Image (cartoon, rainbow, N blue to C red; front, side, top):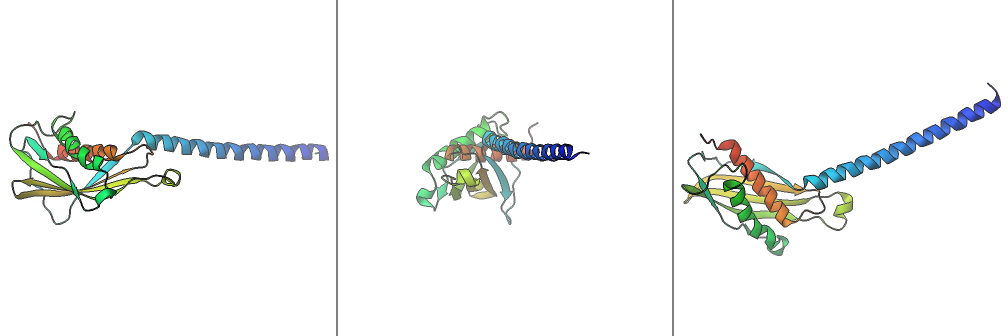
Length: 185
């Protein structure tokens, strides 16, 4: 191989490696953009944990639910729109939603709750990827009798998620949780 051919081969190899590196970086950028789009589309989601040391009743005997606005000891850290949206979102998801586990009317139980923590991402959170969180403790009761206690943790990495979206995520998760436990014949 002549020196000229070696130089062309070396330059071709360097150019090819440069292009591959550029393609890899651009693909990583596309992957990041795709992940961001998926996060935005997914919005808020929630997970439920039964509070340790509490038992869960059988909810098959119930047809309806009453929901009160959640309390909080965090003052203005919890947006009033979260507290005002949550009762209606829970009631709708549990009694009139597409997969509502309760029909409404008849024997009912009550849900009361407390917002234990709320954090709404903002500012640099959009850049750093931090999430918004809402932690809600729900007490399930019939009269004065405890039927169960649930911790619901809603989170979202989407930049457009607000308190109302977090309330909807809590409600959807609670409805799915009951749907798995209530059998309708």
